[in-house]
Image 1: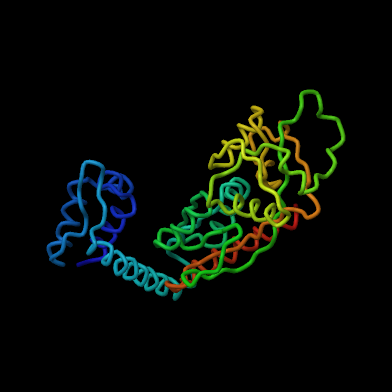
Image 2 (image 1 turned 120 degrees about the vertical axis):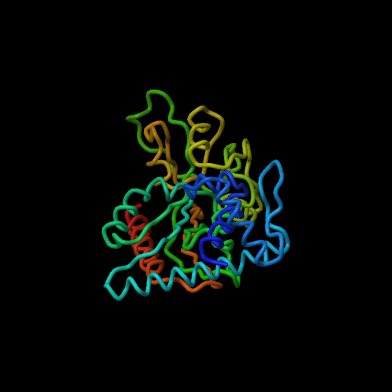
Length: 303
């Protein structure tokens, strides 16, 4: 059993396919299959069930997956510790961001990470909070930003700040010069059909809870997951959205939208950074988390 075999096995399990894993690793599929098979022979267990749709871990494979992730993580920490003797931070950090945050911060975050840790490598994934949390739990992500995350034993949360949600509507033609619309009391929000992500999206659940507290329910016109698609539908007149100002500002045509503040009370979402409590963070991951936190705090202050 060697680290390369473990890495190959983990990659196939994560991607659910030998062909996708081979492409991601940049090796030939027969060579990848051979190394995984050698690992199975040594352990005397079938780790992956191969079928026409891909490959999924067996019961033994799922148990081995936990060991493999831990061993690879420890190996990465050893490499990083050796690099630290030279005074540099090295290793790989996988960061997960909500789509609206990724669209606003991916470029400045990448610049800051490269400038401050040139010997490290980084990946940035965007998605909904539920998917990011799954990636963190599975070990595919090292640090993630989450909206309204609930405390659980498996993750450590650090509050970054609160972000305000606005009612986003298609701007009427010829209204570019008119005054901003008056604030909208939360009690009137059900008057507006919403284009909103499906449950268990964090913002969706927060809106439902806020309205339930005043005895109301949201008026759902369409459920769709993904900020760009939501904004496209709003621009097309399908309904209204509840988004942060950076999400609107990062749209292809931000001038196509009208943003209205919600009051009594305002809709505020809590933004947190999450790491796994099951795996010790490396120094590189800790530094990347610090850089991300500072950028998030600066972004929230500018809103």
